[in-house]
Each structure stands twice: as structure tokens, then as C-alpha cells.
Length: 238
Image 1 (cartoon, rainbow, N blue to C red):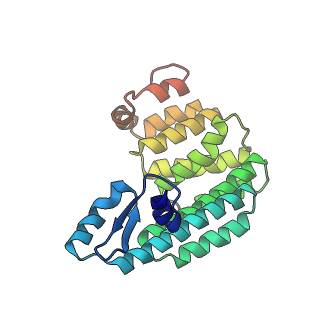
Image 2 (cartoon, one colour; image 1 turned 180 degrees about the vertical axis):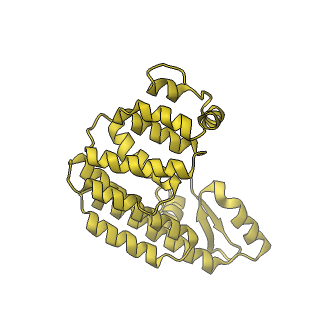
Image 3 (cartoon, one colour; image 1 turned 90 degrees about the horizontal axis):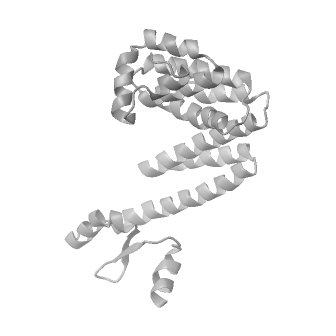
């Protein structure tokens, strides 16, 4: 019990497993998951460990974790404008590369949460918000955004406004044209076409986007290169 109070409680740690490295002078040198301990432990034993740098990085990580919890609460309550301001500030103030990446993800997650909320409410502004979110994104990011915020909503049985579907269709089609070798992107587009009732477009894609090459990619990643094609063409081989 004393170890818990002296280490876990004192450091504000609640999750396990958690490892502490205590230096020769009795000061804690490192705190983290045991799977990540090797590099720090080696450096401490060699005597070239930078305690001050770790403290700064650790404190920034704790700050980012607190912001993450705050943002989850705000987006759950629908306070997206406030959440976006906090996420953007965290991104601008981040120092370490890890913190910058997490803060950038915060910004994107807040924007995506707002889009989903508008779609759920069948808001007239949902399509414009989605278009703004998709503009300038890489094919990979287009895939992730459309999959999470449109396809999964459709797969859950919810209705999605036609103008939202048209925006998703337009951006996903452009992404496929830019990255026809991306099997995950293709999978997203096939799902979307299926919900749009556009089986003819699937056949057209086969002809225009070197379908045989893409099927080969699917076989490597899914184990079945014809599964989605059979589904979208109602069982017919293409």
C-alpha cells in the first residue's frame, strides 16, 4: 500500500502496468509503460539520461491527456466551437513531435465529431461542413474521414442526407483516381456506391481503374479479391 501511495498516487497514475525507474540518487528518472522502458533504462545505467528533458516531455504528455478528457466531454455535450478552440490552442502550443501529432488529431476529431452530429440531426449544413473537412486532404485522409463519418453511419442503419452522400462520393472518387492502388480507399468507395445504388459505377470503375490490379491487392490484404465485387453486383462475377 505504501508503494502505491509513494509512487502511483504521488505521480497521479491510475492505469497499470506502470513502471518507475529510480536513479542512484533516489530521484525518479522515468515513468511509463514497461514495454517502453528499455531505452530509458539503458540511458540511465550509462549515465547519459536527461532527466530535465524527460520531465518536460512527461508534463506535456500529462497536459495533453487532460485536454483529451476535456475535449471528449465538450464534444459529447455538443460544444464543438469551444472544443475546437481548445484543440487548436493545444496544437499551436505543442512542443514535442508526439504532442503535436496528438493535438493535430484532436483538431481533426473535433471537426469530425461536429460533422457526425450534423449528419445525425439531418442538418442542412452537414454537407458544407463535410466538404470543408475533406478539402485539401490526402487520399488516405479522405478515406478515413468518409469511412468513419459517412459509411459507418450508413452501415449503422441511419439515414444520411443525399447532399452529404454526393459530397462524399465526389471526394472519394477523386481520391481513388489519385491513389487507385489503395485497397482500403477502394473498399470505402465500394461501400459508398453500394449505398448509393450505383452498381453500374462499380463496373465502370473496373474498366477505368485497372480493376485486375486492384483485385490483386485485395487478394493480398483480404484473402478474397472478389468478395466486394460479388456483393455489389449481386453475386455476378466481374
